[in-house]
Length: 137
Image (cartoon, rainbow, N blue to C red; front, side, top):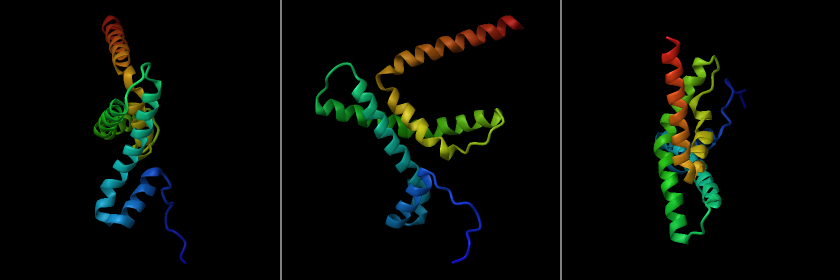
């Protein structure tokens, strides 16, 4: 057996891509693998946020909650990971977005019912940063 020519990626996306390749072929796997990882992380985050909800909910409400947060995470994770990769690169580090998919997906779905409070905090922080920048000019 010849020695590998490069280091194999042993992240969750690579493993999911190999698994999908075995089931559906390589053409589909390169696209489905990352989304499989995003979905798995989103479900874990959504269930985590469901367990933190202050009120008791029915099974149907719990299922809708997990489905909603998983869908939100599926839609946003790719873009947020790419933006985060760019910001990290500006800071002088190299972290490919494929390594950011799991933590970003977990965070998006895991915030759960705290999204309104998080958005208010982000808005206030941004307002302070803009005011500080304007006053320093």
